[in-house]
Image (cartoon, rainbow, N blue to C red; front, side, top):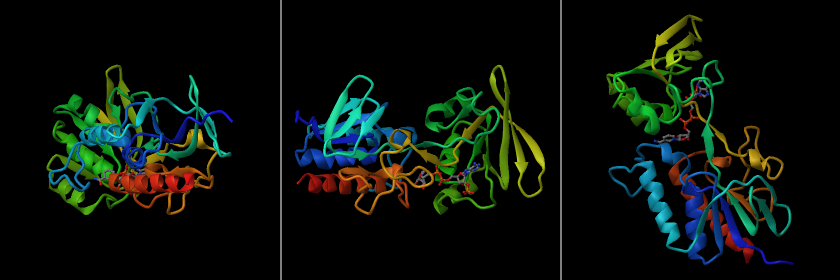
Length: 306
Ligand code: NAP
């Protein structure tokens, strides 16, 4: 048999993938990390992380991932840009096809994370990048003294909605129920923020605009059925995430929502293939849980190789 390229290939360079790389690199495995775009995943668009231990004042997402990357590189791990377009994970030698080459590995860790879910309403795609956004860190400064709508009631919507108030003069937080899902500390901050007004029991039905971009967001109250329209220049959508698993359909078992099913050792249904972080069917999606998964998976890969 020809030479196998790596002991371990990690697909995805967010906190989960980086931690797996750190542990595997220190164990002197030959490791490749593949990342479709820039290393970091979702925390690249997270302005401030204050529940990852070790940073008493918090740390920005981009700064945290840059530190993780520097730490991984100390242990000789390769980080390459490349997207897996097809693969064969069934045998002892795993084959991963990139657009320009094929890589073989003895084990694979899938750490491809999740992406923002879409609302699926008229105007969302049309005005994306022209007032519609899923990234406050990237786009909030464009909305200085503007009125904006933020959609969702989870940690992301509330935290990023608060961040928006640094720029916008008014943030309408549109939530489909009468209670936020976000953690209490964020709820309290939102309540205390005079620029935030929560519009309860409300769904966005359309994002309207013109040549310059978004002009208004149409809402329907799910209790009364009342239809309203809020003049706004921006609409930020934070209604949860969908797993980045399209490339893995048919290769590993997934739940009904497309999250990869693992046991508590991050093992998928395919021997030698592990899944970690937001992409797996985990009860909690945090940086802290992602790095824990990464450590477990690297250790499991080592045991498998032995
Ligand atoms: P999430 O917790 O799944 O919340 C999604 C929110 O969007 C929910 O309030 C949900 O409403 C609403 N929603 C879902 N589909 C909708 C639709 N079609 N139309 C209108 N509203 C819709 O997602 P997330 O806030 O992005 O958070 C994802 C994960 O990252 C979570 O585990 C979260 O804890 C974590 N996170 C943590 C932090 C932090 O710790 N500071 C920051 C950001 C994210 P319902 O409430 O009615 O279901």
